[in-house]
Image 1: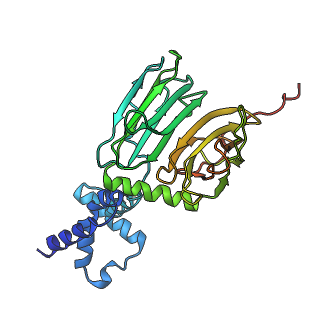
Image 2: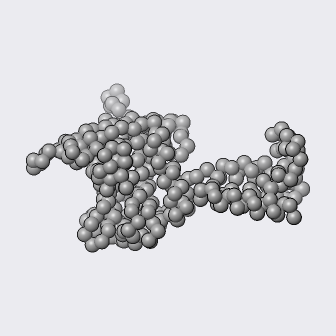
Image 3: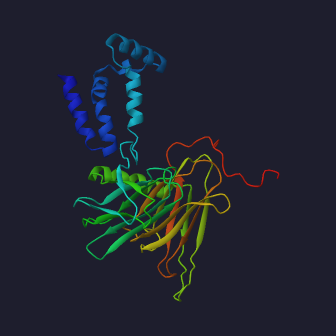
Length: 328
C-alpha cells in the first residue's frame, strides 16, 4: 500500500542520520508517512485542538495520545553524551589492584567512569597503553568524596587496539568502581560531534602556556582559573591542543570550592591533537572554581581548555561554602 511504501522510504532516509537520531526517530516513520498521505490542509490544526483530538483518539484506542508520542520522541531524539544505561559496575579493590580492557580494532574512542562505592576518597590512575612500554595517556584522579564527585571521561585515540588500564593506589581503604564503554562507529562519530561542538562554543575558553625550566626542582607554567556559575550542577571540561601547536600536553586541573578547598584534582597527560580529553564533573552549589596550569616546557606546553555547563542548569539554590566565623 501507499502507507507501507512511504514508511519504507522514510526508514531508508533515516539511515543517513547520525546514530543518536536514527535509533530514536525510527518510530516516527509511520507517523510521517501518514502525514504525507493527508491533504495539504489537513495538518493546519491548532496545537490545543490537535492535543484534544489526540487525547480522544488515545482514550478510544487505549494507547498514548498522538501529540504526546511526537513530543516524547522529539525530546528523546536529542543526542546525549552519557546515557543512563552507562553505569560504573566494576569494582576494583585498593592496594594497587588493576584491571585492563583491550580495545577492539574499530575503536577510536573510549568512555570511562570512576566513582566510589561509598563516601570514601578516590585515588585512581587510568592509563592507555600501546604495546608493552608505550603509555600515550595518563590520568590520575584524587577526590575527597568519590560518591558525591564521580567523574565521567571521554578519550579519543588512534585505531591501534590499545589497552586501557585502571588501577588504585597502595591504600587498601579506598576501593573503586569503574565503567568502561567502547562506542560503536556511529555512536563514536556522534560523540565526537558533541564534544567538538562544545569545545568551539563553550562560554569559557583559554590557552595555557608551558613554562617549566630545565633545572632540577623547577616548576612553572601559566595558570588559568574559571569561576563556575552557581546554576551549573554539572560542568564539562575539554582539553585539546588541536589549534595550539598539536603537541602533547601535561596539566594539573584543580576543582576548588571556597578559598583553597580542593575537592577534586585531575593530573592529566595526553598525546596532543589526536587525543582530545573531555570530562564531566559535579559542581553543585556556589563558590566553585577551576584552576588549570601547564606542567610542560615553554617550547611544547601550549594547549587550550574549554569549560561549559553539562545538562540542565539548576536554580543556584544549593548552599555553598560558609565563610567567616558566624559572628563568634
